[in-house]
Length: 320
Image 1 (cartoon, rainbow, N blue to C red):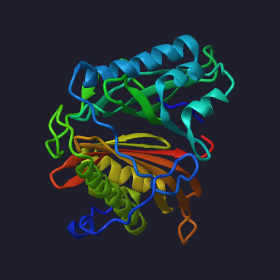
Image 2 (image 1 turned 135 degrees about the vertical axis):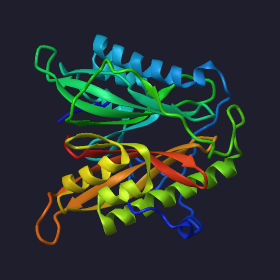
Image 3 (image 1 turned 30 degrees about the horizontal axis):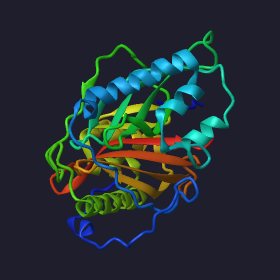
Image 4 (image 1 turned 45 degrees about the vertical axis):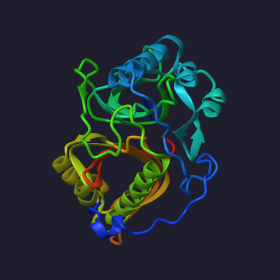
């Protein structure tokens, strides 16, 4: 859930280009560099199911209602989990240094998916924010990425939220099925080399999307690589569906140009689910159209056939 309120499709040849070897790095220290990490695999068991992920999300929300966002987030985040502020920061140290706040959040997952290897998942849905429990609530939408080491509990790897739109916390949860495009069946973790190869292709896809955004603008570019049921969480509210993403994000960009820089990529051991995040900057167009902005982005991808399809794209403007 959100901790704080307020691209042309790739050509097949691009997927075959060799990717330079990049040394591991801490995203909290150098968010512009791509760190080398593949989500650890896990055997199939009840804790690795989507039901368990949804239960973890709901437990996080209940804990936030009972103890506040600071304490709940300290308990929910993974040790390597991150938050987007003016920079990418490790979540636990950031929350530990944040004083308790009367701000109130309520949220519920509306959709999500889990990797066949039971080690990577995401959830997304509506939230309500108020400065204090007595103040009127403002709606928004969030996305959370969850990670699981071995047979341990699900922990938040990264999450983001945007204000705007409407929020129905009582809406039923609709699971998002993943295709058979991965490299391993449930319980059969792929080799590290194969998983790293999938991760390399995901980085190429993310960078290719950035190039398409520069050429065609965000609406057309995102629609070009998106699944039909893509969710775009951009300032102004959630946008659902490929056609709506094309038209709505084109209108919201209002002529501004966007530049995205990949910082991190994670892929499940099954190779069927991946996430990327990094920084972005928006600049007014040559005619002065559009607004300047900067911040960070989060993307969730599903492996389909020989390529990656975008399931979710979220922006977190700096200072929000």
